[in-house]
Length: 527
Image 1 (cartoon, rainbow, N blue to C red):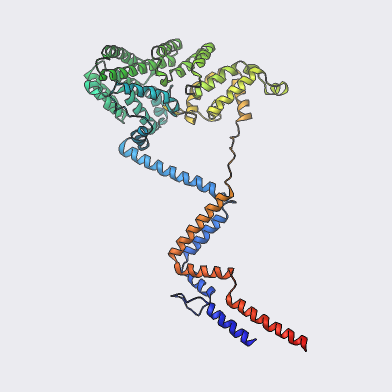
Image 2 (image 1 turned 90 degrees about the vertical axis):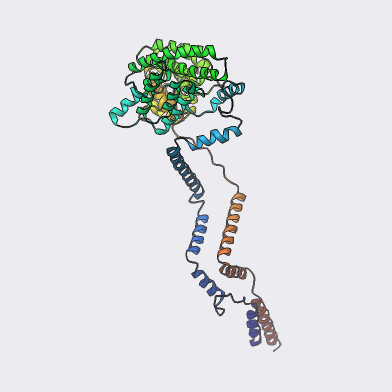
């Protein structure tokens, strides 16, 4: 037994690991591991914390929360950078990169590349009109007048109704519609080109008066004064009439000279945009002053005279005016033309179509009666039309049902967004209230179908994906720790391997002890 124990101790001594520099060789591997880990401190707790978070990732739904937090952090950083760049350079960094770098890669070209009026420029305009349905941010067709309407809110509340971003988009629209590459040929147009870029309203108004001093027939100067200086709709209409007189004169001159050079064609396009804008705002002035039939006539004439300019959505102005006249047959005729799958949709089109179908059944509609006898064909059509409208923009019903307070609509709207819902309800709520039972049917249909926001089922990732992610993360963590603490990780690896495989001295001693026991057993049995 003593010999066996001695041989076992010798085997254990041979199998013991070599001493690690910096650690006491007389200590056992557990003591040396503990001593090594004592110096790591925060790193060990960090590793332990990461391991605990990984183990609790499923019950705590850490993956979803981390993804949401990461996206929010990135969005916040992008927003801060965009705000800083805009305040420093006066333009959007994302928009500038999109127009300058991404548009050429996607097959588009900037207007400065091709000569104005050239065939490539014309093809470019056609392509832009075809791709218009993909645009999400639109100019509000029913936008208010800054001086006569938005400024009233500022006088009463002391607050600005428009955001800086919204006004910047309007400034870009004005430069697109009212300027061209040949403005240097007309001194008044050169002044107005600078006026549209001014951020300060008094500076823009001052520049407009300077342009009128150079040319009393500067239509765009009258437009700016009508939009921003006039404090009433009556004053704005007077200025727009002066702008119309000057704009028609310039438009006829441009028509006569349009074939002389590409520059003259560019001037004609600009003068056309100015003329259409003036007539449209005159129609809106007539609508606000109660001359609705006059407004309808102006809009119809515009749509006949300039059919390619459907991107201005003049038909939405026409729909609202016809609803005010309660000319529902004419409204249906306009919808039949513009409620087409090939044309861009809007809340005005979808909800007006729903209103017309609701009008035929809303007066006698009762939820109790409908639940007993079922829905008729007309009621089914009305409900389906409401479903279609709510699917396009689910924000509108809360404003129509006055569950959310209305505010002044912005100058630009996001299709299918809350801003579009505000703009639609601001002008069309009165038309829904005029039809008895329409809001009741809308509420019953909306609450029964769309009150709870649907949550799409989340696709579960396969187990192999989780295993691969965990294995790669663990391998990377072990590699980092081995690089940072090579001695400690060496001791840890030997300790782990020692737990998994039997020690040589243990097996040798076990065999010798077994042999001794067998010999003793044999001795007893022989005795």
